[in-house]
Image (cartoon, rainbow, N blue to C red; front, side):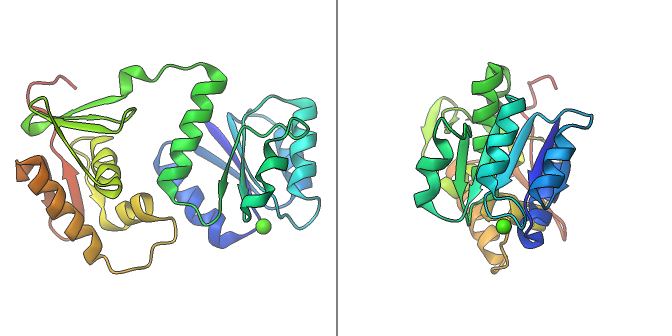
Length: 229
Ligand code: CA
């Protein structure tokens, strides 16, 4: 699916585009409102628009209004200020949701999925449950994790980390990509944080081998042995 990212700040747009591409999106990027409106008129159609309000030519409100005049494509507004939200979500503009900068990548992806579910009526129920080794079951919809049918309480980051690794069992996620996707699009902190969370997660899941270390690269989740792929 194609997503149109309308954002003039490269420091935000570039890591965002990389992260979205890793999640399977085809990203089209524009840094002015007028270019973005022109892009919307050219094939292929976009499934979702991410719109920064502070653009160098016409502002995001005007872009939102003009997009709505011609299309029902879902719009998520990226705003720097919480007090703009009422205007953004107002009927006049018709945005579907918003995130306040600075936002975490996982948060944005969750909003994107929610908006797509709402606007397309697509059911994701079949994809909500992840079965991993050691009897670990991750429900990404309710954000609950069970081990052998007993619920395990995880912190928000521990859950996001497990859900990310579980999104493609057997695939190795690099340390950089994990930090970028679970922590923030702009995470430049100590990578020791990741090891601490992995260790905590392994302990809570009971079976340390559920999450395998790929030396010098990153980590991967082990698929349930009795679940067909
Ligand atoms: Ca801007």
